[in-house]
Image: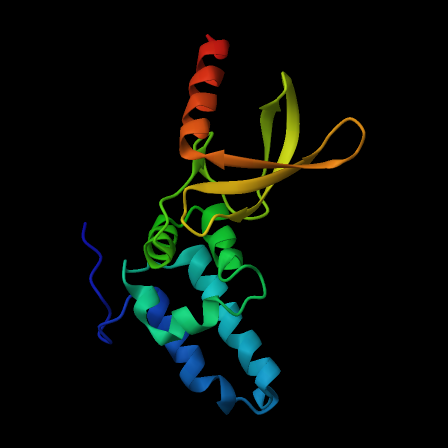
Length: 172
């Protein structure tokens, strides 16, 4: 079933964010910029968890100017929420805005802060995604070696696919 747009002509996600943006200052306790920003951020994160996005929603100033202000690598906090809650329309809209294809590992999207297990030098290590390359060709992850030194991994889609095939092969 196709999801129609609301009477506003906007997606449900953008309708909520616009409503909060337009009316948050009306509440007497939201008179400061900090509270206003928190209200808009909370609306965006609520939308990321539970509302439908249109592919071009991030072309709107209501989202593009605010998602980047989350204090974490320009919008990656929003993407983390959308990924964790498996809101695919939010993920797709964000990926389109960033011009970045998703990195899928073990059936889930990779996001900044995601922990995963990865084979390094014939050992399985607990790793964490820390960022994505500017060109979208790889993501950066860190882990600690046996001497507790932090090491950096640069993982491409090809490496993810190879690791996925190797895991499937070893499971059979």
